[in-house]
Length: 281
Image 1 (cartoon, rainbow, N blue to C red):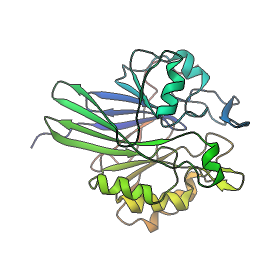
Image 2 (cartoon, helix red, strand yellow; image 1 turned 60 degrees about the horizontal axis):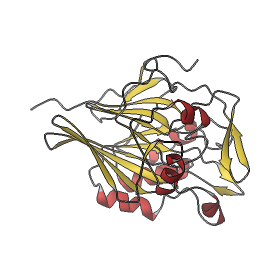
Image 3 (cartoon, rainbow, N blue to C red; image 1 turned 90 degrees about the vertical axis):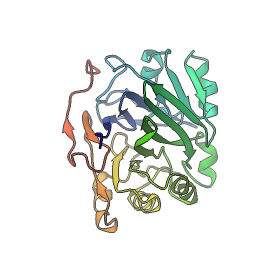
Image 4 (cartoon, one colour; image 1 turned 60 degrees about the vertical axis):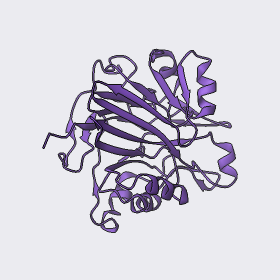
């Protein structure tokens, strides 16, 4: 039997990560603001960054795509807008694609269910837009359109890895849609933090995060997006404390600047690795 292709995540902070699946490298939700700088969240809302990013716009490896779950200042900021390449596809929601096209990015709007396929030799990477709900009630109308993504990597047609990146979402029936469409998910990258605005949760807290993991039935979860901004209210330790409620599921935390295997049979511990290229300074 041939050896399975590698699948890793290098964490940059917030929702920023480098996903590497075989020959492919994808940058997600580039947030390069430094500690103390403010991210604009729309509708007069802003939050100050508490941490230093482990990735920056310079020194990144060659990218096949940039994937942006939604257009918020803690997911795509002014540093990213000025410094990122315009030469690779930027996959995002239709509304964000229209706005970022003004800055000459190679935007691709992805309504729910859209699949973009990348090819390199005998390998393919499918990036599929899946449903996400940032908040409910009146808050939903105040927040931007958001999407989750499922990444399916194949070599000569043989599936190697399938990873669900939740986007900024709550749990619910829309997650069941993802689970039904992708019954053999290998891992979920769960964005949480439980920020609250006007008394309502926007993005999963620990309770919702555990519910999402149960719904999709994955054996491996990598939690991110939980401590970089002041609006986050649900720390990582709360989610880790839910581990007994998730029998058969491995929770694999990853520190900023570290790389973690996204395969169940990979190493269970994240290994420390400096950010690829130059540090963000």
